[in-house]
Image (tube, rainbow over the protein chains, first blue to last red):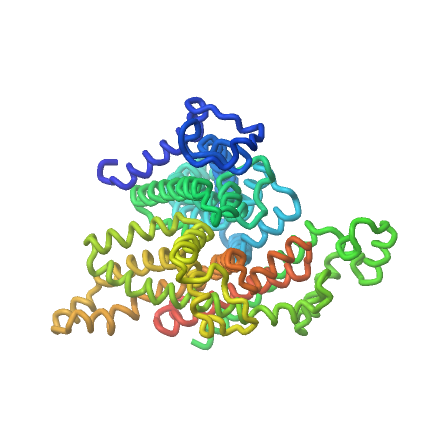
Length: 272
Length: 316
């Protein structure tokens, strides 16, 4: 870790963000349920360190809540994507031949479809909640991890320990789950980290375009989107704090993922 | 070379066929029946069924897909549910503006990123390299709409240098005829790509700088400038060509966001409005177009790289 000051910075930053979102509400309890129009759009100061929004909600408290929603969605989306991608890639790599060819061409096809379009279409059709949003994002972003894991499995499957396991009569799934996946874990962890970062951006973009979570649940993206309306009214505290939260979190995740990638010593650019 | 191009062409056509099938069936799965969308929520189920029957929407989905595919090959993209206009007409009206916006963004991104990446590699770990890497990380972590907003707040509302809205002209050449109004949209669109491109260019230039041909060029006594422009540039740009090809979907998504933020009447805005209107023929056509552009982008990238590097043909 000491050789990677940036990784350390990323990790600390991430801890800070998670601490802020999870423990923050304990230190700074706020009422995020009742509209308080008397105290709406107050500038930062006094009881509200970051002011209040146009419904009178405390912005700092709202940031903590929104961060929790954003992190939950992104983490779940990344886990869904990585689980599908890992299993798909492992099966394709192990099967080889025609099956592998067909499975990977399908990935090519899916990769050529602008995925934001699909997510938009789905979230416009079905009013999005946190769970469905993460499933949809996860369901469309497993493609790159599938490719990476397949590549990893292609080199692993001819190694002695895999051959030995197969000779001993281990079933395919046993080989995949107990031998291939653990050895591809480094690659997998790097992809998860990148994917959490990407998911945060996607969720916030959806929020901005008006197809994110429905009010009153608010992730950082939809908070930013509603703050944007007032940017010309000089309500800067509705825009910049939440913007900074998004940037710092994604930055922390990317730094961490890059360092992990260096640490396992493989070119696993999830960024294609 | 011809054989390689032909091979890639066949693969691209198959991928395109796959895309059309996946997109068609997925949209079919999530959408209401066309009759319901066209006639509205208050119409009786019988009227909806009659409408669907009259227009052939009650046939099996595979038959409908093949029918759509057949008309697609004749350039017929169907008719918008809500705008009483052919989808191809609507797309033709907006495509030029979107294309010029994307192109301007891409050109700007490359014009900044390629020299920057090479310079970073040459002065590796120097102050410029570190600063540029830091900025790239920041840009990469910034959602493009947030960046656009900050640009609007700073350069439009406070400094008053540029308008907050993109050009509303119907001509696709607004980038040239109204450069002031298009400055902020183009910069917003380019910024995210600059971060990605510059970092890639840096690492591929670093790879190349360690190669023997660079040492030979140095040993010959060539000037550093000549080495960089004549020898390094061409080889270091190869990975970038492939990258641009694969990034087409991301660039198109960027278009949707920038067009919405700056209210620029292009395909992205048309797509967003169609989303609200549940205008599936338009959504289908635009998504397919995005897929087509990606496939064409990948194909061109592969062929260009193969044309520049003859070894690829052998490896195939």
